[in-house]
Length: 268
Image (spheres, rainbow, N blue to C red):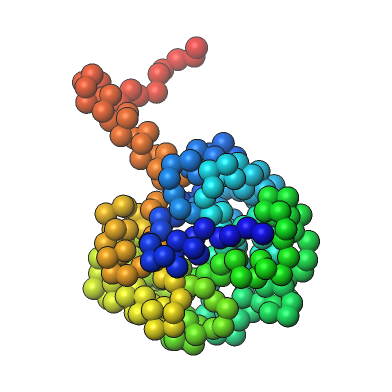
């Protein structure tokens, strides 16, 4: 039976850094997983990928020993169970707005009698060896609170039996609570948004569950760890690729004095 390294790391009092995959490619997943992250999450919700990409991406990450996780598109049992069967050791579920929804989400991750997960760990059984009821204790259930309704029900959600933590997505949290007054984005500096983020953190601490935050930069992520967050995601594959490519091009142009070349006129 496998041991969830992320859960073990938390039990030792050590915070974690999470990688984020939005590009549906096993080579990209392999590269990201080899960079020293504690966990890496495949974004099935907003990523440019589907299940046919998810399975080989999990396979590619195996050699690096990171904790593989997935953010599912919705609180829907089919894709949650399929991601687990593919090898996900943690599931991040968006738009959890009540304790009832949180309990429903948790039930999809646990085999009976704790939940209603269907048995059929097609790849997980090969990847982790013996795979049975003991998986109930290793799979992480992380709910996303992203709306005003979720904030209103925060304490009840955080107290849901079997819920391992809350994952904060600042972009949707801003959209869902500020009535269009603020644009979406990571690394919030508005006092009201920092207060909301810290309120979620406090609810997690009060209920003995983990607090996780999606960040855009390592500086902000480290700051969040200082606040008490247990896990921070720092950017993601698509943004990191774009940033590195842009920086490389800018350096070349600065060093060569070359202006941006306009489209060449005429046919080749």
